[in-house]
Image (cartoon, rainbow, N blue to C red; front, side, top):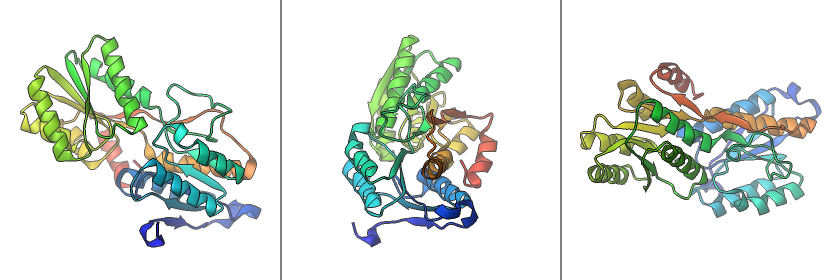
Length: 315
């Protein structure tokens, strides 16, 4: 990929006194996407950590998110002789095993800015990553199901996944469905695309075929298509839930069209990897447990507070 095709930002050390003799620490953050929208908060977190710690942070990402393209970016960071690499991992560990081994051979600290294994707390000494910083996605799916049950949902729930190849989103969907079924509630998986119009059409048709549907969850994209389907079908009673904080969700939660969204506090997913890499490089420190940034719920009770933090670039 040419240099012009690569977008990056560099955070220069602004406080050289923090690092003393090791003021040339270079950390590469290999993102999943451009530093805008959701991923902008990860990038902002990494940037602020670099500024606070006095280390150089370089954010790079593939033009199109595929495993080969992302591995290529990791190799680019290795070739640049980074001291540490933080990865926005989106695939199963097996996809990164070889490149992780190459980073280790090169003496480069390698950590994950993504969800730890579901249900895990203490780090496995054999983990290919020094640390994992993210939300427990299976816990997030269970939390969604629990909250719907508390809201009185007893009928069908449809769980739509816009990126079935994303391991994170699949964990969310499968966990929610399993939890609901264990409670005696019908729940179905619906494969969708990333196109909001196609999402809306698919959900609209699903609701027409399944009029007993009481709730719908978007697990891997913004809520827009679900909101459109709810409006077009005249189903004002349909409970909508989603993931992550975007302007559309905050507005929909405020006006009642969406019940809640699951927040993984992605600013931390950017900030903590830079902190943990820096402390490992400087002091040899390895966190004994995985750093969970979520799941948490944003609903009518706290949406105003969260909206303020969103405006400030932290949520």
